[in-house]
Image (cartoon, rainbow, N blue to C red; front, side, top):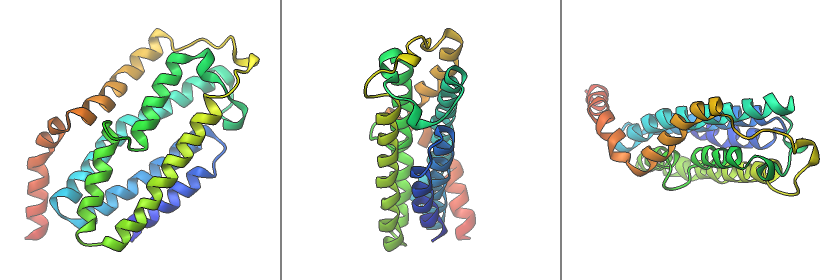
Length: 209
């Protein structure tokens, strides 16, 4: 139950945020609910999903916090409503932001998708009602991230942001590893599961006695 509350409540709190950094932070709180839900199932799918969520969230969330830091360094504020049309002036930055956001909301083919799906599959075997309620969090997460994309990156370009430099070489070297992992572990899931598999099997054996 705590996992479901975490997912749904965290997603709605994130949706209410006007500060870009706080939105990312509360979305992280919501994602940790999938870890609780998967671990509560205590089966292979659930625990695998929990571990994948922990690992992959560490890449997408770190990337999003870096993205917030980059735009704060230029604009000196984090208010979502004050941005708009950044994709016109900073296309590379926008592309990286889309990658981080779509990974975080669990788009199929990116790393964030698999942890959530496996956690829900594992939890469904024991807690079908709570699992169904948890999907509300998925819908709300997609909604607030897509609204953030529209408010920050799309729409008419604002003149006050015209001189903002796009991603620098130093910033690119920070983003590249996280972006690569978001794609690699979405496409080549077996690489991560094969590495985590023995530890997950030992954990399940220990808890099942």
